[in-house]
Image (cartoon, rainbow, N blue to C red; front, side):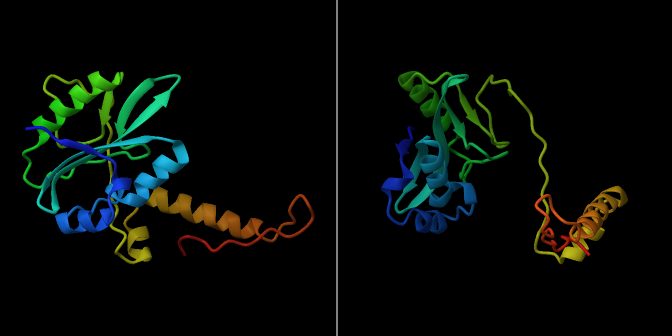
Length: 184
C-alpha cells in the first residue's frame, strides 16, 4: 500500500479537512506549513492516505537544503516532537516504504521524523529527546505552586529584580518600562 505525497497549500479548506479527520495537532495546520515555507523556503512533502474526505494517515515533512547537512527531510522543523496522524495505527510500514523510496528518488541524505510512535525496522535513533507537558488550563497560581521550591524562588527572584530595575534610568537617561511579573 503506497501513500500520496501532497502539498497542503494546494488544498482549499486544509484545516477543515484536518478537523473532520480528528487531527488536532497544531503542527499539521496550514498556518504552520506557511510559516516554514514562506519564512525558510522549505518544500512540503506531506505523506497522506485519504478515506473519502478524511485523512486516515498524515505525516508532514519538509525538505531542507543545507550546506552543512545537504538535502534532507524533517518532520517537522522547529518541533521537538511531531507524531503522524494515524488513528488506526496501520500505516507506519507504508510510510517508511514510501518515504525511503522518495528519499532515493529525490537524493535526500536522510529522513528525520520526530515521533515516538514508530521507527523504521533496524533504525537506530540519532538523538533521543525527553519531553514534558504542562496543562495550561489550570489557574496560574496552581501551576506556580506545583513547581519545585527552587524553581519558584528563581521565578520570584527574577520578577523581583525586574521590578527593582524598572525605576532605574536606562542608558539614554529615560526610565525603563516596568514589566508585569509573570507570577505574583
